[in-house]
Amino acid sequence: MGDQPVSAQELEDNKRFVAGGYLIGNPDAKIKLVEFASLTCHVCADFSKTAGADLHDNFINNGKISYEFRNFVRDEFDLMAARISRCGANEAMLPLTEQFMTFQETLFENANKIGDDKALEAKITTLKGGERFFALADAVGIVEFFAQRGVSRDQSKACLSDTAEMQKLADLTAEYGKKYTIQGTPTFYLNGARLDVTAWPQVKGKLQEAGAR
Image (cartoon, rainbow, N blue to C red):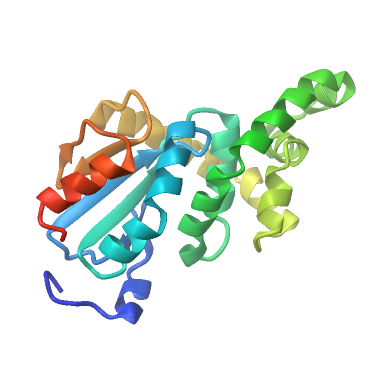
């Protein structure tokens, strides 16, 4: 495909998981943007909000760039949300991720309430593995958040119980951190070079400098 225009169907067909990340856009585009982000990072949420339609409509959906999202999990809530976002249809992963960014404030409020409920806190503490993950995700509203967007409670429970996949996400984060020297999120790589910016206006400028106009 290269610099040639790509159809909407081709772009849809190109949405897929690659090497632990999630790729959308034109995989043969000369301009390749990779984002390492955490679902519980407020700077990542700000980027997602401000980039929004501009990134998708003017850079990804028209085939100018390939965009790859890679989860860089920072905590248990991040890990659980990242895992569930991958439970449904492939094409739902990125929309679910972007929507979850808007849930951060409520998530943190709910997490703080657990500390005030000693009985619930004690119950969750006694659980292990997938049971604990599901109970904790349920208590802070993560399960309900995704249930309202097409990932059922049973799906979430099954995915959170798959401790091997949960460990893969954690291992990928460790691998990314070492290989790409990631110390904070979001971190962006453009055509293999690390960017020293985190806000959309600056990332947009870098894309335009690279020829995505």
